[in-house]
Image (cartoon, rainbow, N blue to C red):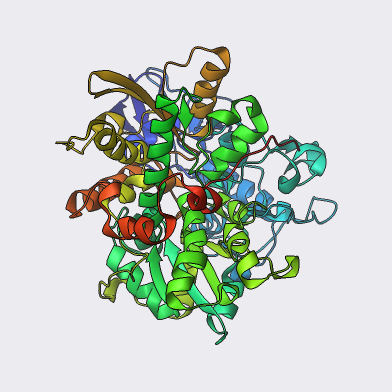
Length: 585
C-alpha cells in the first residue's frame, strides 16, 4: 500500500497498523500500553496521530493503514494530546522515583522526560491510596504505580493462559486485581513473573531478598555459598550495560566473589545431576510400563500450573526436584560433610532468571537436607531449615553489583569453585527451551544403546517455535518427544494427555517464552530478539565445553561413587526427588 507519513510517500504492507508503518519509516511513536507479541489494547492514548479526513486523532497502535492514507505524527495538536494523556497518568502516580525499584528503567519516567513535563498540574482522581499486595512469595504488587496499561493482564491471559489478574472496578475505581482482591499468593498465580517483566512502571516487582543476603554475608558465623543458573551468564551482562546476550560466565564468577560469597558454585553441576536422575527415571518408566509421557519438572512456574489446572496429570511429572533444589540438598549434606560445615551455619543463595524460584525454595517439602541431618544431629522441629535459603533474580544481582561499585565490564574471568562448580555442555543448555530435552537425550541414548552418540547437537528440539516435536531413533525404537515453552503451549500438550491423544514418551515444558533465558527475573526489556541472542550464547558455551554429556561429568561420577551410590537409589530418593499436590486457591 502507498501511504504518506509526514508529507513523504512510503510503501507498506497491507494489514500493518499506523504505528508499525511509522516504525518502518524510521519514526518512533511513543506508547505505554502497546508491546509487541504481548499487548495492544490502546488504553494509554499516547500513540495518537492525525489522519487526513478523520474527525479526531487516531490511536496508531490499533488503527490499520489504508491505501493512500495521509498520516501526520508531529504537530501542535498531536503533541498537546499526547502530553495531556501522560499528565493524566501522572496525576495518580506516586512521586517516589528515587526510591522506586524501576528508577531509570521506568517507561513512564522516560516518556515524562521526553515530553518535557516538569511538574504535576492535574489533581488526583483516585479517591484513596490502594494497598500493596505482599501475599506472594515471589512478587509484590503496588496498585498505586499501576497505569492500567493492561500489559500484565494480556501476558497472564494470552501468553500463559492463567488469568490470575484482570481489570476490576469502573471509572475512578478501575484497577488491576486478583479474584476478590485476595492477593497473588491466594489465587492460581504461577509466580512466573512475566507480568513484572512487561510492566512499564514499578507496579509489579520481584520480592527482594537482597538485604537478608547482605546480612548473612556480613555475619562471620555464616558460610554463604552461591549457585548461578545457566541463563544468568547470558543475562547479567545486559543488566550491567553490555550488549544483549553477552556471555560473561567468568566475569560473573569474579563479581560474585567480590560480593563476599564464601564459595561460588554452578547450578549446572546439579543440572547434570538432574539429567542422570531424570534420564534413568525415563528409562525405568519405558522399561517397566510406567506412566508416559513423562514430563520434566525443572520449571517451578510450570509445576504450580499443572497443580492448579491439570491435577489429574500429576503422575506424568518427573519426580526429580529442579537443579536449584538438588543443589541446596547436596550442598547442605555432601558438601557440608566434606567441608566440615554445620548445615545450620550454611546459607545457600541462588541466582535465578525466574521469580517462581523464590516460591519453589519455600515449598514445605524442600527440606531434604534437614531430614538427612535430623537423626544424625538429633535436630528438632525448631532447627528446621530449607535446602535453599534465598533466591536472587538477575536484576537483583545487578543491583548488588552496582551497590558495591563493581565495574563489571573490567572484571577478569575466573572459574567456579569445586566440587560443585564442575559441569558439562549439557547442563549449560538447560537455560534455553529444548535444552533439558536435548541434554536428557544425550545421556539416555548412550545408556540405552551402549553406543557413543556421534552428534550431540540435537537441533530438532532447538528453536523458538511454541511446540516442537522430534522422533529419536534408539536401536530401531522410535522415541517421540515434544518441547513446549509458555504455559499456553503446555496447556495444549496437557489437554492431549487428558484426552488420551498424546503420542509422546517424553515432554519438556518451560514456563517462560524462550525458556529460562526469558524468565520473569531477567533484565528489562526482554523480547524475541533478545531471547534469540541469549540462546545463541547458551549454545556457544555448550559447543566450547570439553565434556558435553552429563553422565561424563567426573564430579558427578565421584558423587555417586562416594555418597549417593546409584541413580534412583534410597539416598537419591530422599534428597533429589519429591512429589506434587493438587492445589486450589
